[in-house]
Image 1 (tube, rainbow, N blue to C red):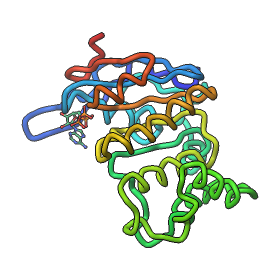
Image 2 (image 1 turned 90 degrees about the vertical axis):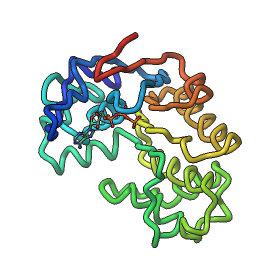
Image 3 (image 1 turned 135 degrees about the vertical axis):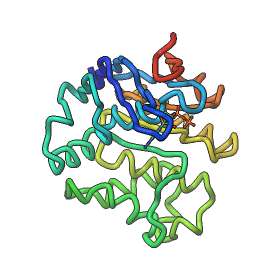
Image 4 (image 1 turned 45 degrees about the horizontal axis):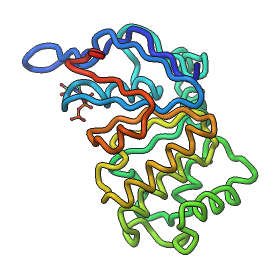
Amino acid sequence: MLLSVTDVQKFYPSASGTVRALDGVSLELAAGEFTAVRGQSGSGKTTLLLLAGGLLAPDGGTVLINEQDPYKMASDARAHFRSTEIGFVFQQFHLIPYLSVLDNVLAASIPTHPADAKQRAAQLLAKFGLEHRLHHVPGQLSVGERQRTALARALLNQPKLILADEPTGNLDRENAEAVLGHLTEFANDGGAVLLVTHDDEAASRAKRTIHMAAGKVVE
Ligand SMILES: Nc1ncnc2c1ncn2[C@@H]1O[C@H](COP(=O)(O)OP(=O)(O)OP(=O)(O)O)[C@@H](O)[C@H]1O
């Protein structure tokens, strides 16, 4: 399994009592699988993605990424592991505003330093139709171009798993289709995709949909 989440719990303290953001959630994702996570606002989808990505330790249960528990690693080792195993894509892109498109993508290689990073970055950007934008900064790009840059960054280290949180939330239909097409291709090539989305069209790309409510998987 590329991802095994077993009976995870995450509780947040709040003024009005403890929020049970995740309350016993399990899921598995194998190579080649494209799974969507749906559910109302506040049902725990983003929290699940953060736990699954080694970014937020669960209060109970276990997360195995490629059979390894990131939360048993020291934080440096965990950061390195994350950068080689997982590509993250977010609704708000999270590009660095003062770096060029090329350098934004190359930022993903900082923990790993592969010799061919620059060549791979340029290849990915060309594949995503951005070869004429390498030296622009994100503020000079359309939103669709920004998300395709973020996708190139996510793929630079050739991860096996992509975790995407509403990646089409800020895009028009045409740009959303392009991003979903690339995610589908990634899964068809043997990667695994976990996609949090509110969008019917985006969810329809997934082979399986998990529905969440109040911190639990409901179907
Ligand atoms: N850092 C935090 N501190 C306290 N409560 C939090 C924190 N992060 C999330 N929560 C709460 O945990 C619950 C789950 O939040 P989460 O963001 O995972 O839901 P979501 O399904 O992704 O929602 P949305 O669709 O609106 O993004 C919510 O009740 C939220 O208010």
